[in-house]
Image (cartoon, rainbow, N blue to C red):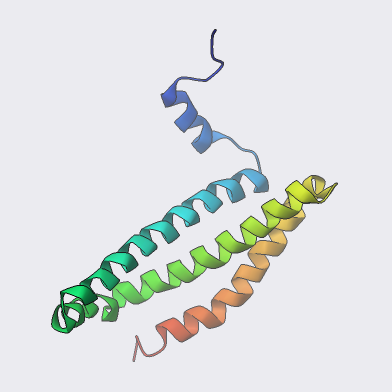
Length: 132
């Protein structure tokens, strides 16, 4: 039995070069934001594990979260959670509601607008005081 799978190198280049429009870029960003959230959760688990090593050890590690770089990463985390959640809701709509697949572009645009509207105050609150 033969498989119809493309060679590995072609699959990677196809993902990066395919010009499938809003659906494709939303698909790619959905996976990237999911990966970002998983990486944050791994860091969070390690952080909570440090509590078991003692309060002093835990508090020494907290300096990481007070740096300007960490504040910017928090903004990206907020974006990742919002985009991933709304993209997941879009996927559910497309999969479960007949005819929604034809409205893929509109759903992506609505999701991006919602993310941007929510991101402005969230980023403002997260970065507040960083530049003072």
